[in-house]
Image 1 (cartoon, rainbow over the protein chains, first blue to last red):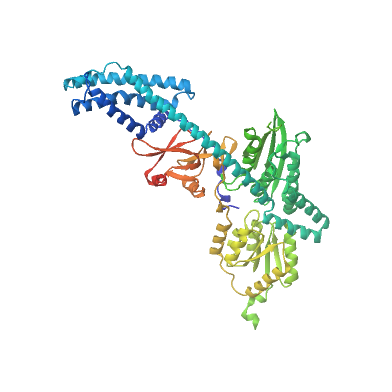
Image 2: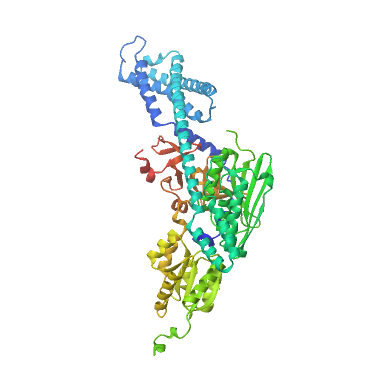
Length: 379
Length: 259
């Protein structure tokens, strides 16, 4: 038993879901957008503007820039043209549509608005430039070339974005495959381990031996349950799962062994209609859930309790419930691999069509509910 | 004369058996009676509470304690018996327990009971019965740490949503965020609150996947898809399935230096 077993029952906590105030969510959104405005992008834009500044400062007749002041004026002008669209795109990008055509259109419009704003800004700056006698900067001419250049910048941005997304998708897919493989082997190992867990095995053997001395009939029964339970070790690992009927037999064998060991402290009920017994489930699923119920729910209680396995059908799904009236979860952290593995194996067998959830039993205990499709997924 | 020297030999040696599985308790009693006829079994307790009661009531010289018992574990009962009774643990084969016992030099018997091994235990007990039982305080502490479930990292978390208790497997957690006395557990689809401080959690999580990046944030690095710096030079983590961006505070920035 974990040392925290006598602490307050953390699991009974009802979590209030804090609503985020609109101002706060706006602040978060802006922070998120600004975080996309990386130094990298700013530096590239500045470098581009410095080069473009040379072009602007050349004056109407061409030739080299007339002075450093003129060049700085050009850079300032370029920055004022291009920084607004960059900021605008960074701000809008996370909220823009995901599909490429609408996304491009929306972002092009945003860039256009940014350039227009920059152009207006420059009109103000132009007046200052004029007062400083940097005549050339007044002749920027039509904003159209600027817009074109900003759109080219956007195109580069969109291209890189798509490339990154594709890379990410590939990476995710590889990761998913690896995770699945790891979970499969982990699940297989765990099934074997729990079946031949020495503590369980030797305890059961101790019973068999003693019962053969005192009550041979009970000893024979115990040995029969034990060999049925262990005999299942061989065909357990099947990708397509086993019929609920088989898994139930295994769980019942396990329950019978535990009942001999725990005596009057354990009772169990099975309520699974015959019509549902062909449902495909991961091997050892019920045993894992029953084991959990006994280990964490009933075993710590001197008076023990009841384990119930029930199933019913509902609109294409079969619901299988393993419940107990034990002490319930004593902490909301668990290190056992059992539950996590049942979930992983359900996902392997039925993809997203299956689920495992837990709830508090009434008046106490734990209800583990498994929902699986009544027909196996078509391959 | 020997009577004056060790009064314990005059009174019968009293033993308590605490074992929740009745069949095995019977067997142990039988074997002990055969091996040590002078021993008087004063009580057989079926759970930790009964064992404690019997301990107070009978003050036995020897206690045979099953480790896994309902109510209170054998280790907890042993704590009360320490210094008063000679403790012998009873256990079925268990790697962890055996390793712990061997190191701690505690007496133990294994299930299924082996008469020759038990005879050895009885001999040792007879030799020690006149002496003051050892104080097991520090030994038990070390043992319970070894036998504790805490030897493994957290694999799943349960969080209440109304009356439903939701099961979150640790792989699905994107990050944990401190929220006063609670911790927000964030997965791709939803957020849950659990009554645990982030510090508690940090100790129970596998440090190879869960990195603390901020006083109040622990992130699952398998869910991180990118790192960038913002205009203030802070490190920011982007997540695969979440929109939010997590800042890395300065004391933890070194974790990402090599990347």
